[in-house]
Length: 181
Ligand SMILES: CC(C)(COP(=O)(O)OP(=O)(O)OC[C@H]1O[C@@H](n2cnc3c(N)ncnc32)[C@H](O)[C@@H]1OP(=O)(O)O)[C@@H](O)C(=O)NCCC(=O)NCCS
Image 1 (spheres, rainbow, N blue to C red):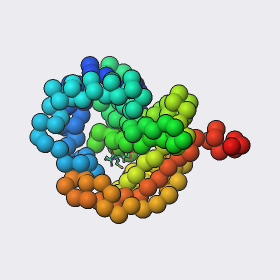
Image 2 (cartoon, rainbow, N blue to C red):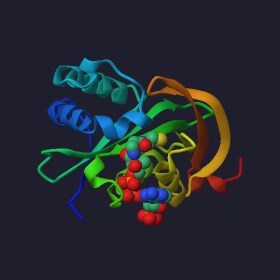
Image 3 (cartoon, rainbow, N blue to C red):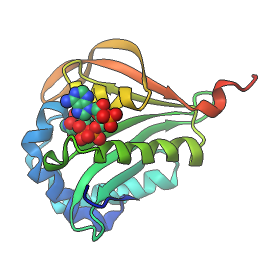
Image 4 (cartoon, rainbow, N blue to C red):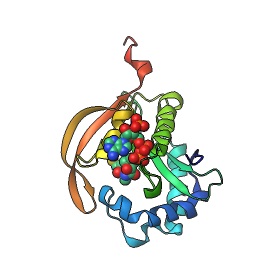
């Protein structure tokens, strides 16, 4: 297995993030929102990663990348977004892996890292992750990480130009499961 370095992304990753999304456009398109052509340019990524730094400082999201040890290219990415505190203490999880690394276990390692961060560092209660019914690989990944299916939302997210149904899943932080009150 390629050695994997998992880190929080920052604006210095604009070039490799742009390359990742450009090279994997065909692979990711069936499972991603449609975006304008310049969306994955280096400039757009620099701006996006800068905004993500602000979101991180405000406690709203955390974005990770898995790269090779030299950080020469992105292997996969994983985000904790829509972090809500108060009585909910939850977030959404999303992820993708480069086509050439698919099915080799790298994704699971990156997602495991994000889950540990959400539960151990952020002390969140629930991580929610959704997939299209036809996304068997995504379903398998979540099942292998003990996510539980909780529901089915019709016409849930606009993916590749079409409103798509999604299976709703979540994982509850085990430290809270047996606590009173
Ligand atoms: C979904 C996706 C991230 C899965 O990545 P992956 O590289 O296949 O994942 P991994 O190799 O780390 O596999 C992790 C687990 O997924 C499961 N899995 C992998 N391929 C599978 C398949 N074809 N069918 C069922 N389960 C599968 C396995 O159970 C594996 O667990 P194991 O280690 O216990 O065997 C990848 O296919 C992808 O990037 N797809 C395009 C983007 C996308 O769909 N993102 C998610 C949107 S909801």
